[in-house]
Amino acid sequence: MYDPAARIADMDLEGIDVAVLYPPGSGEEWALGDVEFAAALCRTLNDARAEFASHAPDRFRLVAKLPMSAYFLGRCFVTTEPEEKMVPYVFRSLSPGAICYASDYCHWDSAFPDSVRILEERSDLDEPTKRALFSENAAKLYGLSPREER
Image 1: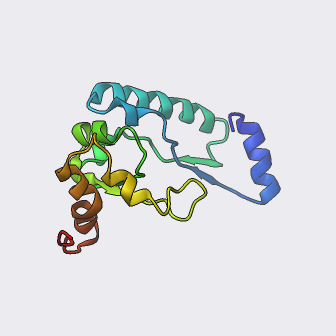
Image 2 (image 1 turned 60 degrees about the horizontal axis):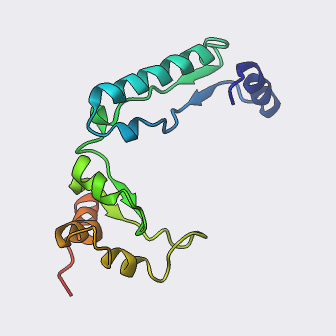
């Protein structure tokens, strides 16, 4: 919603006094490795959101958007589905220890029952990357022991 007055009207309709507005994914994720560009994207988004909230500062509270480099690396994990084409790039650019496999079971677009096979058969991922995706990273995230090779 881009109209603060309309948002206030909707809040009133629902009986909501204050809305805490969280930032959307706004492209800084694609600035991987370019810290200045990511910061500029976040600044632009935060400025636009501050202008929106200024129409009713007693009704809107904002959570700032921060570049991934400010909080992400070493603290957060992401998941990938087997057909994601960007996995090799993200492994090289982000942090290979922060990406886990996700089957997306039981969503309508899940590759079940072939999701493991699809990822395992990808030629653009080497064996250490596959081992990290399937086992090592999830073990680190959840404090588990990595599964032995079958």
